[in-house]
Length: 258
Ligand code: NAP
Image (cartoon, rainbow, N blue to C red; front, side, top):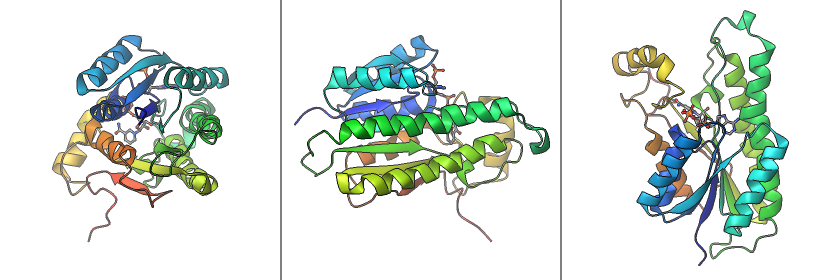
């Protein structure tokens, strides 16, 4: 069987890197996308190789159509086929602040990177996957979207992020419905608070919420590999009869408690 091949956006650092390394442990080839930090992307590739996989690094801004085209073309040129797209690349809100003062620039950027990018990347990849033969399990491919607890938990000081993550959750359902008959399963992985560069500016606040107040029943920060393992399970086809499913990787944050 051909080596499992994956494209992970924003895989140079944080959660995306954690996903790439877990896929490396499966012996997968991983296209490691980044936008600015080539050094971090090269480090991620070294870790993927050390884990038992291989791949290459590829620069590209998911918000830009020509970059998305190039990203996908290069991945298919190198690998010949693709088994998994992980829409992970994402950015935090520009400035946290009162919803009544929230500006257009941050919302436009949120939309471009966190929702428009994954939408058109999924569209591009799906069209290519349709031309692939089904694998032994009957699938042509898989798409995973990394959303957030912010898809349903309202943080009024960064409403733009919450709105686009809610949109990405709906996007998962839309592609799942459209592609099910074609042998392409689509999943949402919904992380809680994970220790990465994205959350380091608010570390003290979240230390209090997680460790002292216990906002989630499992009182610890999430780690990139927690998310990576969920994606790895999808890559291993542990859920062949599931599509559009949501996997909460959040220490139980989503549970209502009394
Ligand atoms: P991070 O540490 O800030 O890493 C972001 C990654 O995305 C980097 O690899 C970065 O590349 C890349 N990236 C940023 N903008 C990009 C663009 N326009 N095109 C392509 N790549 C881009 O973030 P993270 O915490 O790992 O977050 C990853 C995903 O998980 C995001 O979608 C985020 O919303 C989601 N998430 C995070 C948390 C959390 O607590 N951390 C919780 C829930 C969901 P460079 O290295 O080149 O800058």
